[in-house]
Image 1 (cartoon, one colour):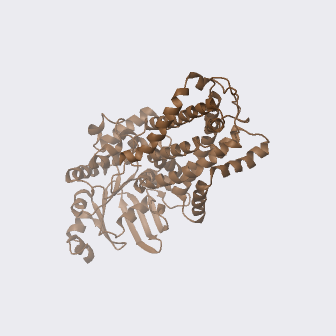
Image 2 (cartoon, helix red, strand yellow; image 1 turned 120 degrees about the horizontal axis):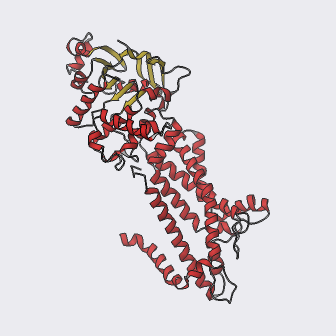
Image 3 (cartoon, one colour; image 1 turned 60 degrees about the horizontal axis):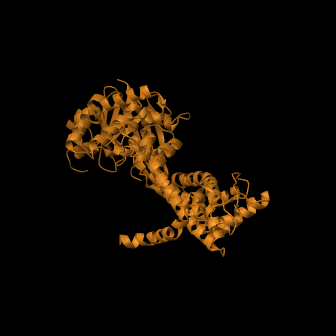
Length: 253
Length: 262
């Protein structure tokens, strides 16, 4: 089994506050990996280190090593833009570009990087929307409606389509369903199930049932440390660490 | 309440129409001014001159103002940006006649003649602080999540700023530009010793040039009834042109852009 994202000795800070302590993690390729843990434990910071969004925050810094496939994410010759092209991200709150049409939202990653071949863009938009299970709902209003005019669940699938359109290797999802109703949530989960055949998926979630449903592997974070990382089944039935057990049985968090 | 808000505007506009409409005819728009005593005549050269001066001013003020606004909103931490903000606010409060004197000293004295160019520079300088501060404000209203979405797609930072952040805030930026434009369009003082005025046709930006506010001023302070009537008509035309160009920009800007949260 290949390693999709290899994290070594990763520590991260916001100003003087340390948010992550020495994380080591081999995230398997073409599987879904869930990151669970109580609020403020560094889950989001962790995945934002993978696509180098962490460094966009003022006074934020980090140490350690992240490899995406064979790309050294924090290597000397590597630019943040290069990393982000290979690592897509879906955020907690749907964030379509409000002034762009549905079509332009999906095509934005390519268009903003100077790619303008109409025929290819049409194909990519259609394929991405199919993959995100949104095509049938929007195909008649692609260029007529703004991305912001869709419902919350549709907006989130639009954001997934937008991320898929640039064909990343890794897909980071930061609580992608936490702002959505149960029906939209199940649609997103179904989607993750299909996507993980082709993509390495890292999904941060507060919902442990969700982690159990969609992910083969699960990492448990607490106070900025990775406490345990193993097969999901093992984490939820027979965790090795007492703290993991306390958390999943609801004793704290 | 609504009546109170629009009452002053309606009063000004109504009075202008009442006094000015009688002198408006085709000749007013197509003819040159005529000497005292002759009937008729128009302000065609002043309308064209104003367009030229405002065009020059916009070429200077719009890119400069938007550029500085982007800098302040996206990179504006620390001492230098704070100084810049302060400078912009001070510049905003400088009386327009002082700006005219500066343009006179820098451009007119150097070139040794009055010109549309020097008038355009004076008005352009007046546009900069208004546009800068307003652009900064509306860019800061664009949520961080929108920028992060674009960064996360692997789009270069400058490209995100221009094609995503600025575009999301475009309605606000356009409003800022229109306000600045409307403000300078009626300015007279900075043009007195820069564009200077001209009784004849001039399309050369390097020559003294007529402008509507200057023409209105010249007519209004004259002792002749006929010229007073022309001044009223000129003021009416000026207002109509400003309102018209602002409306036009709005319509054009709306087309093709989905109005978003800005």
